[in-house]
Image (cartoon, rainbow over all chains, first blue to last red; front, side, top):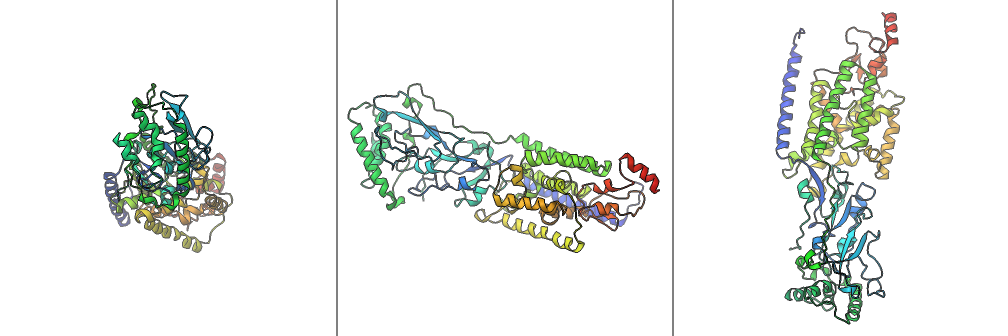
Length: 206
Length: 360
């Protein structure tokens, strides 16, 4: 450093040091409250479609329409351990449609035909009504419209279908477009460990 | 079988039948009373009643159904029998945390390279190569989301809302370019920022914006910054991340997006063919912060490093109007290194050396 240090340089150095210290302080403050990794997830107890107590309404389709991904990153998931395995599943069948020869509703509920139904356990060919059925949702077809979620609730369903974010599709937007539109603020940012736990549903108490 | 009875307890006349129907497969199996003949006919009747009920259901007040969800009635693998195993619910994992750290490291590395290429090597060619690389990685591969511009909102929100959890990576992304700017100027803008890179590469025939208009438009970014922070720190339901929502180029990076946003991005690119990096100069709120930091910068792009030579070719070559009175203005300089490429003395190309002799 052969150049003489001018007063201007010195002033710059001091101010720069001050700004750096401010940045450092800010960064430390933020890091202290920071989470390692945060992802978007649907809070099942807030979502109109899955929240128990809200029945009879049309399913909220904002997850389908608002997501920036072409086929929404939100899709319906059947938590099998909570599924009633019903013969006449209100989420699989359009239960208001005409009854066919087998005694089942003739129409399916899902507009994209994403739900598959198969008898499980000791399947009884003579009495299909008394079997258990497994309902699996094809995640490549599902666009998260929430129709089945809305129907798998009281009075018929057990509420095993919920909307969830699929992370292979989610763009992880800084401000999720669905969360902006969601009237119940049901899309929340949670630590990644929490997002992967199965949702816990509680009946609405208020 | 009290549980089943409780569940079907009729709250209204029609409703009593409904749970009984769906539960038939569950509770009846629990009662070990399978294979009763003549079940089909009542079931059909139930279904008809059910259809009737549902036809009129909307007229009933929905909230009046007292209901506690009997999740425990859900049959488990052992109840189902037949060797059935409950399948796992598919859960694709989010991007690994270490990959996010890698993004931050790459961001830091790219800025370091940008500083070295532009200040030390004074090479336009390599600066363009870095721009293309950054556009490919931060833009099209990471889909525009290693983004200090958007992180302004997260930081503003995290500073004001104690419950808001800001990811570590976002904090680093926000501060790194600012610290670099304090020492070397806007190295992030040139060659690293994906939004800048896409505009940099479409610039065909720059026209000179009148300085007064340039200065006036430049104030827009501070208005945008203020507005973005104001909306970001509002309570959850009214909150909006304006910068991300109106990011004009993210639609191209993701190859999907709302038509009006793609149109806006296309407009910016079209304008950017003639006006150098319009978003960066007039709208980018982070550019505003960086510009402020560069006032304290130690070093920056310098033209005519050793000897005054006022041919003014560099000033003409600068598409951003960042050379005034034969000096580079650090707050406006976007590290594109066009001035070096235009300089007859400074170029690293062989033919410029001949010119150098000619000139001197």
